[in-house]
Image (cartoon, rainbow, N blue to C red; front, side):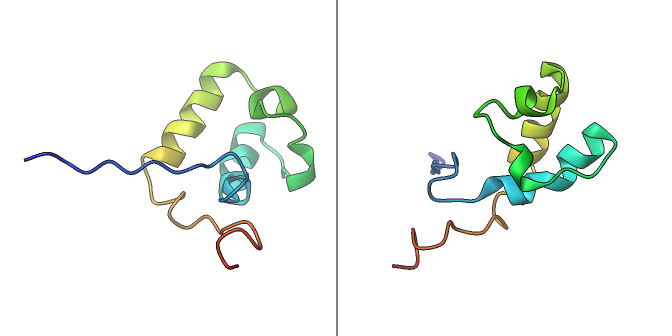
Length: 79
């Protein structure tokens, strides 16, 4: 039996994934992280995080329901 795979555009155009990621980023940075600090497509670069740590954060995002709980970007999916 083939498994259905569904892909989502999560670069901030349809799904606001950053808000769901903020708690993980704060933990990695050992300080509160706010939305406006993410000022680069490369989140690790924006927060001066090592690549290995950012890879761990992405793994957490993709292997847990965090993305399922990410809110849609206002006006994109609601009309």
